[in-house]
Structures are given as C-alpha cells and as structure tokens.
Image (cartoon, rainbow, N blue to C red; front, top):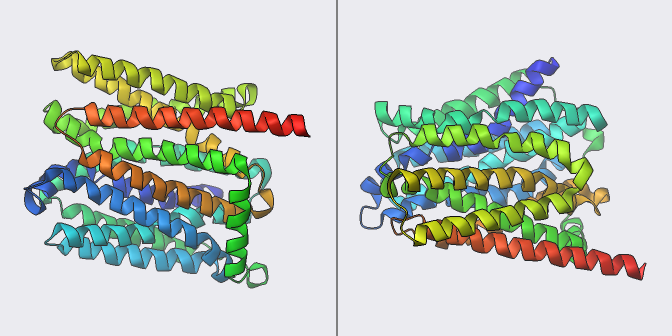
Length: 400
C-alpha cells in the first residue's frame, strides 16, 4: 500500500465519527415528528447516545488491539457498527433507536482509536506527524460535506436512508482495509489484556494533578462541543426558520473553523499549550457573555442569526485550539503508558461530556439561550481549572 492510499484509508476510518454525527443533524426534525412528537427535544439524544457508546468503546478498543492485532479489532468493530445501523434503520421507537445508536458508537470506537495505532506502528517521530497532518486535512472535509449528504439522502428517501449510508460507508473502509492493509502489529509485539495493568494505569493517572486537571478541562471542552452539536440544528430550525439552509451554514462555519489547527501549529511553539488553551477559553467566555447579553436584550431577525453564526464559529474555533493541546498536555507526564493513557483519558472525557450535554440539550426552549448558558458555564469552569493547574504546577516547581 502506497502512502497516498494509506492516508486515504486512515482518513476514511477517522471520518466514521464525524460522518455518523454530522450527517444526522438534518434528520432531527423528521425523527422527532415520527418517533417522539410529544417531546421533540428528545430527538437530540440520538447524537449523545452515539457519543456515549463511542466514549465507552474508546476505553477498550486500544487494549484489545494491543492484544489481538489491529485488523481484527477494526473488522469486528465494523461488524458491530453495521449491525447497529441496520437495527436503527428498522427502529419503530425512539428507545430502540437510541439503543442502536449507543451500540453503533461502541463499534465506531474501533476505527477511531485503532487507526491511530496503525499509523504509530508504521511511522515514528516527524514522519508520523507528517502523515497525521495529511490525514487530518482530508478528515477536515467531512464536517463540511456530511450535513449536506444527510440532507440530500433525507430529501430523496427519508431519514432512514442515512443509516443505509452508514452501512455502505463501513463496508467500504472495512473491505478496503481487509484487502489492502497488512497487519501492522505482529504476534511477537502483542500484549495480553490484564485488568491489573488497567487498574494500575488508572490509579497512576488519578494520582497526577496535572493529568486530572487537563482531563477535567478536556471533558468540559468536549461538553461544549457535544452540547453545540446536539442543539445547533434545532436553533437554526425553530429559532431562525433556516432548516433548509442549515447544512450550508454548518459547512461554511466548519471550513472557517478549520483554520484553528493551522493557527495552533503556528502559535503553540511560541506561546505553549497552557497559555493557548487559557487564552482560547477566555475568548470563549467573552464571546458567550456577549451573545448572552444580545439574546437577553432581544436582538431579533437577521441580526440575531448573524450573531449566532459568529458565536458558533467562535465555539468551533475554540475547540480547534483546545482539544489537541489538552490531549498532549494530559499525556505529557505519562509517556511510558501513552497508549493506554490516551484511551482512558479520551474515554473519561467523552463519557463525562455526554453526561453534561444531555440535560443542557433537553432544556432547549426554542431560543439559543440554554445553549449559550450551557457553553458559558462550561467555559468558565474549564478556565478555572486551567488557573488551578497553573497554580499547582508553580507550587510543585517551588517545592522541587
């Protein structure tokens, strides 16, 4: 397999998560009308159920791939993902749909996590970073296209057609990988799963204040992202009456927010991860406070829509500046268990964020107010944790 083909395959596996979330956004009104007309806000749970399953799956797929190899775990995860998509396609109740989406998230965790391990098996150092950069450039296209693809499928064949697309998508990358990618973890490098090692790694993570604070901030940043994703479509639909044009607004914002990764690459070496994260959260607090004031004084019409679009761009931009840096910050003192630590940190952050996002999403009242308040509160808490991390590190430096 050439490097170009490898990059394309890994990017496709990475894209499973974004495609499974963003393409569902235009389907929320139809799902609410068919399965939960008495409580339309509950339709948002199909997003958080998927994310919750993904978070729990993230905890296990890394260690499983270390024990049994990369390809089997991705293939079995794809089978789970496809089976759950078929159940969701046939679901006649919201409860069954939510259960299927949760299981689908469990399956999606395999390509999400193990694809990173495949790159790590083949490349190292700067070459690995270079390959990851190419993968992420391609991956960045998915949030732009997914809502439009979802809207097109819904217009032609209804919201259930989106789940057929998931089946075809997973069959595509799983078949491609099975036929073209060699197993990158030979048997002599595999490590058996031991609960004692998992417990020891978790205990070590919880004993390090810098890891605990960084994971807490990561959880809140994931919470900001998942809260926004679960509520943004109802805001465009119910608040502004722009359901038809929502995919285009979302795609344009995704394109502009993509520049955050480039800016982060430029400034992180100069400012450092901690300062950049703190500055991004401070900017988010300022923007969300301004949006809260504008909503409170009754700004209406196109002016309110444009303010919301600018605020949403600020949310996605802040996420782009924080998530990667927070992962690196949390892993900084645990390089000797980096793979297991990455699985645990992201699993804890994802599941914790879902717990935060669900009640905020269900509080939607036809206005952006619950969303803006939810994001503002989480940003303030994250900013406070970053200040506490800074003080803890200074005390530790003086003690040393």
